[in-house]
Image (cartoon, rainbow, N blue to C red; front, side, top):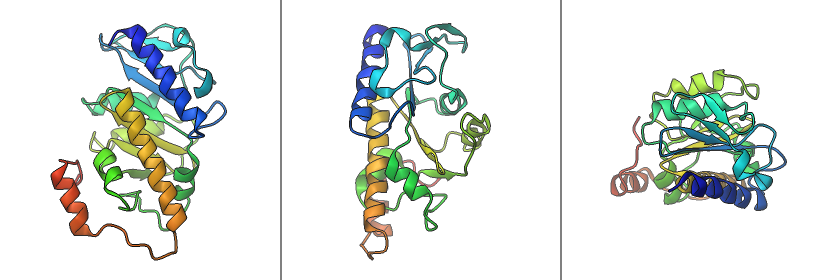
Length: 215
């Protein structure tokens, strides 16, 4: 994919997320690897609904900003995933309503944030780590991701929002949508005694689809 095409795809997918209410106002940030090892990143203070392909922050392979607007203050989150997961080709961070709500629930599991309600979140995300609350832009968020040593493709920032790395921008967006939808199911079903997948069923999904799970 050419860089021009990648710029267009970033903005198209970001607008799709925004238009469907998965992030709002000027919240959220998104990045993707370029063919030369650099990064394209959404600028600070911008809306997913109105990103300009020509104004995306452009970093070279050494991490130097070479063109575009000032990048998101959440760069430490993005670089932590790229530096620890060689398979990461894109990173998306949203302020999606149901996942944030689920992060506040007293029964949210810090090691495995999403309950096993369907196979699809397991397939696309593996286990999601629930991280504690950090001030927005705090580099300690990146340190927390680095502390996972590349063993998780997704984290949930408590009272803040999810962050997901994928092999490319489309995969990352699809995965973070699955995270939000599973959290929505969890909120809808909370306290109802609904039947989640059994441990045997979860293990069958993990085995069948070669999911990173036991780290």
